[in-house]
Image 1 (cartoon, helix red, strand yellow):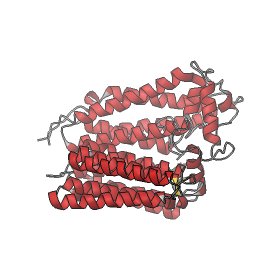
Image 2: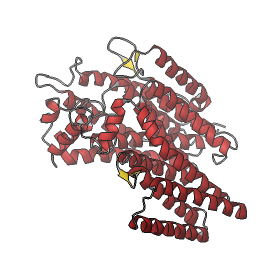
Image 3: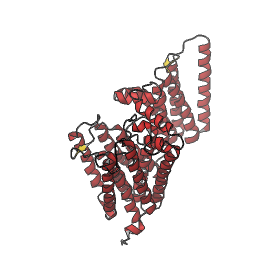
Image 4: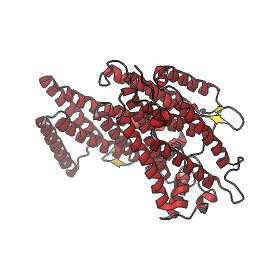
Length: 482
C-alpha cells in the first residue's frame, strides 16, 4: 500500500541548493561572456543575459511542476515518453532547417528554437530505468544487455542523422550506469583500448617503419601485449601467457637478426603473422580446455585487428571540419586560424587569467570577442579569464559536489528504477562536464556540447533541469511502498 509523503519536506535540499547556485553563476557568466562595453544592465532582455533570465524563470516553474507529479507516472509512462521523443527526433530531421550544418533545431518563433536531442536524454534514461525495474530482469543476460544497448543506440543514430555528432556522443555516458549495474569491466577496458588504437593508428598513419605504417605497427604490438595480459589475468592461464611471451621474444630476436644482416623485413606482414599464429595457438588451447575466457581473448584480439584497419576508413568518412579538429588535437596539423582557432584563443584567455583573474567584466580576450561561442560551448574560458584559477576551481568544486550528491541519491534508492535513472543522470552530467572543459583547454576535440547550467540556451537549461528534478521527485518518494 502506498504511503504518501510531503514532497517538499523529503526533497534533497542540498541538490536544489547546488542547482540554484550553478544556475545563478551560469547566468552571471553569460552576462560576462556576452557583455559589450555599452551594455548597461544584466536585465536587458534584448541581450542574452536577459533572455537567459527568462529561461531560468521558466526552468524554476518547470522544476516545481515536476515536483508536483506523482513519481509513479514517470515509470508508468516511461516507454511512451521514450517513443514520443524518438518520433520527435525523426520529425525534427525531416522538417528542421539547417543551422550551422545540423538539422537538430525546431523553430517555434523567429527568436525561439528548441533542440529535441537535449530532452531525449531524460526520455532514454527513464526507458532504461523501467527496463531494469522489470520482474526478474538480469542485465548480465546477453539478450537483456542488447535490449539496453538498443535503447541507447536508437537516439544516437537519429541524432547523428541530424548531423549533431556531439549530442549523439553524450549517450555514451550511459556506460557508467551499465558498469554500476553489473556490466563486465571488459567493455570499459575495450573502450579505452579502442581510443588508444584509434589515436595511435591515426596519429602515426603517415609515418613509415620498416616499410609499414608506424601507427599500425605500434597498435599490433600493443594488441599482442594486451592478449598476453588477458590470458594471464583474465583467463588465469599463466602457462599459455608464458608461452606466448616466449614466442614474441623469439620472433623479435629473429626479426632483429634479419634486419642486422641487411635482409628486408615486411614488418606489417610479420606482425600480422605473429597475431595469426597466436590465435591459432589459442584455438588449440581452447579445444583442449574449453575455457570460455580463452575464447573471449581470441574474440577481443580479432575485433581489435579489424577495428585497427577500419580506423582510417572511418576517419576518411568524417566531415572535413571534424577530421581537421582531430588532426589539430593530435598535433598532426597546426591550424591556429581555422579549426584550432577556438581552442587556441580559449587557452590564451584561461592562461591570461592567472590565479586571481582579471576581474569581473575585465577580460580582454572575451570582451574583444576573440573566442567564438564564448557564451555557449566555450563559456568556461570566461570564468578562467575573469575569475582565474580560484574561480575555475570553485565551479569545478560545485559540479563535483553535485555529482557526488547524485551518487549518494542513487545508492539510497530502494528500487532499481530510481538507482538506474540516478546513475544515468550522473553519467550525463559527468560526460558534459568532462568533455566541455576538456575541449576548452585543448584535451578533447571540439564536438560542441554545452556546460550544464552555464552555457546559454533554453534547450540545454531545460534539459538538465528536467533530468535533475525528475530524479529529485523520484528520490523524494523513496520511502513510499508500492
